[in-house]
Figure: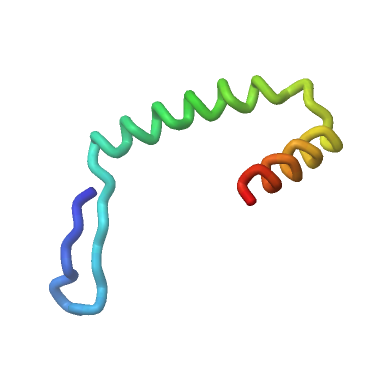
Amino acid sequence: MKREVCGHSRRQVDIWITQEGLAILERIDVSMKVWKNEFKDISEAELKQLNLLLDKLRG
């Protein structure tokens, strides 16, 4: 990430994502697609139940 204070307004900050950051986001996107595919056969009711159980485990 590249960050610079704007020249005409000190309150404004311009931020750019670097090529390294874009590469990380691309890897995350691929992982998310794989992860979502793992849950494709789980019903909405089962997902809600899973969420409740996970909430209980987290306390």
